[in-house]
Image (cartoon, rainbow, N blue to C red; front, side):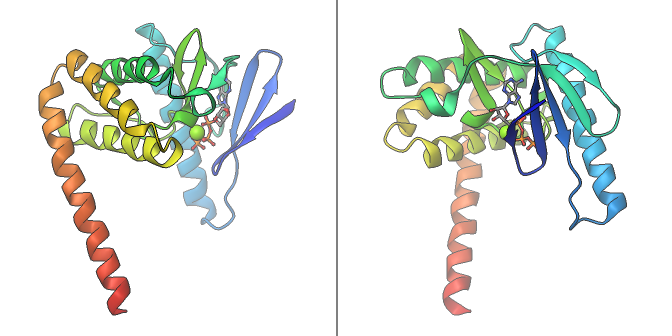
Length: 207
Ligand SMILES: Nc1ncnc2c1ncn2[C@@H]1O[C@H](COP(=O)(O)OP(=O)(O)OP(=O)(O)O)[C@@H](O)[C@H]1O
Ligand SMILES: [Mg+2]
């Protein structure tokens, strides 16, 4: 088995045509809590992958779940969106992102970590990393999901992020059942964010 990635929570190994995603122990957490957390994220990811496979959404197939901390999933042999998004392709790719987030949301799934490191391109965009996903139909949860996408684009794709985000939101609004309400809510989420940032920096100045 070849180690191909190590995130904050897990190690990913490539074995033939499958990925073994192993959520490792975090020694700074209390043992019991750590075990519960790893188990629940693994379970969550497996459940969401299965549901998405059922509606033919582009995700890697779930091969095996050990019921604890390890998943085996199909290897998607493509490129991370983070590494290929550029000025020429960003409108088209972001449109596809917006479309696909709308499908997730229309099916009551919030991704929870919409970044371009969690998307792989192979003829089309595959979404991965559902460890922070959850089921919800709330406008607020959908708006926060998209706000995280904005922050991810802003930090990793400076120069083109505005163009990308605009294109993603446009296609999202077209396809999402409550698109207009979600877009309105994003504005509120953003205001709240700015207020928090402002408070933070004020506190830093006075401390
Ligand atoms: N099915 C897959 N096919 C190909 N590459 C994958 C696949 N799953 C993950 N990867 C690669 O491994 C990296 C990390 O995977 P992933 O995002 O699932 O883990 P993570 O960020 O550590 O997740 P978590 O936050 O749930 O612990 C991805 O960015 C991608 O490069
Ligand atoms: Mg990830």
